[in-house]
Length: 416
Image (cartoon, rainbow, N blue to C red; front, side, top):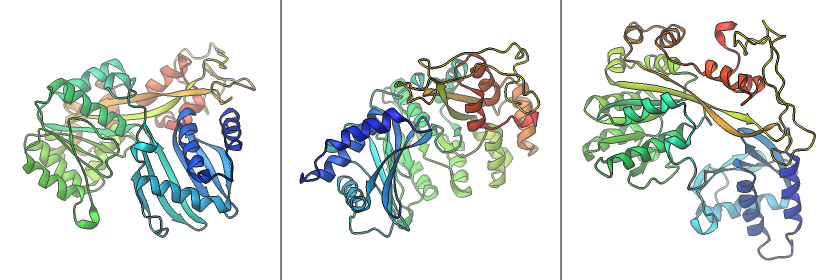
């Protein structure tokens, strides 16, 4: 659903720019960055079409069309972005990535370009303000999970796996973990990272960006990094068996390893590692915890209308096909709401689950290579609150909606 207030505000500001000005294109780029930040956009997509450059903003995880620019402006806007990122303006046939220089933005902004049929597409990542989402206690993680995670971060060895799909906040959580370790240790632990790319500079950590073209990939870099005497290692992402093997071997030799991994749940993360031919005993010996998280849009309090149906006693809010008459708090946006742009949502909340591989039944299941459903069931029996259970509670409390849960998590497989 478009956000009228966002697109109209950008249109009004854009009309004030003078095409006759020598700084017309730089002013457009400055306007895009400033208005996207003010509009709470996490990403800006500049997509070339046959006759225009179409701009979308991702707000609270959802893309919204905002504006379009004339075809003749398209290449100039992309070229200006390249200039302020220090990229090669004459190379339009290969992907490039870089950061917006500090004199052009007060906060971290990353730009990637990609060649397409109608020209270069640019994606702009707008990172959080410097004072936002810096610490673990600012992320909104469940209290019990947060306490367990902070306890694991004090360990001297083992792997902490942060999982979820793209855009679920894994990297934000990983950086918050690093800052928590730095603050708690007061500089007494050597912290090093291997990333592709380095997304945010963290004071107190030695960060490195891999360069696969030069033979400096994650697996190779991790083996060399271990000779730098680190206490804590952050591996940006496990993408292949070689990196996974190196990360778990690093944990076995007395290093605390934090890393991210694409998986739909904590149980699926373990089965994916097994599919990568990581030995069950290695997982069992090295893995300290697995966290899976998702981001859901929160209901806009300024335009939400709460309606209750008494048929929700059993809390089964996600099985819509089998219980179509049951409903929880629903969001009905007003026709006009300047706060949320009439979407019914404002901001996002985090859902997270933590699997403890040291639980006896879970441990045995890992060694026996059980499938993800068995692992999930055993973990929940041992006390893990699943993502769907947490989502049910959020819907019941009116914090979000069933539609948003279905959009992000899909239906609970247990009720299919």
